[in-house]
Length: 96
View 1 (cartoon, rainbow, N blue to C red):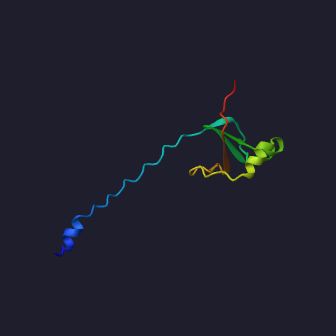
View 2: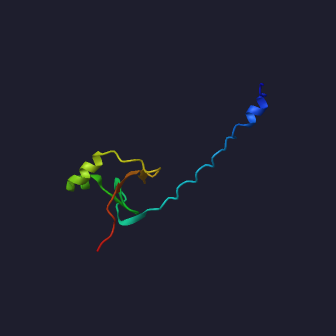
View 3: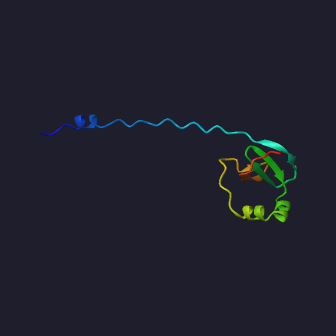
């Protein structure tokens, strides 16, 4: 016996549209006191940002020099601050 096309269609599950995911809440960063208006790179340690001079860092730190050679992962739309690239470091900011 042949089934009608309407009975076959009703046995299929309905497609459920997934709700769009809400954006991940962003954590705002705080500018440190070390913020040169004419700096050309922003270093971010946890939620603290430092706008400094890339050339000075490269001159005095072989670790940072090598780190700047490695492409940085995208930062979710936060790739630059005031036109300067943001480099994330794993160190935390704190004195004492």
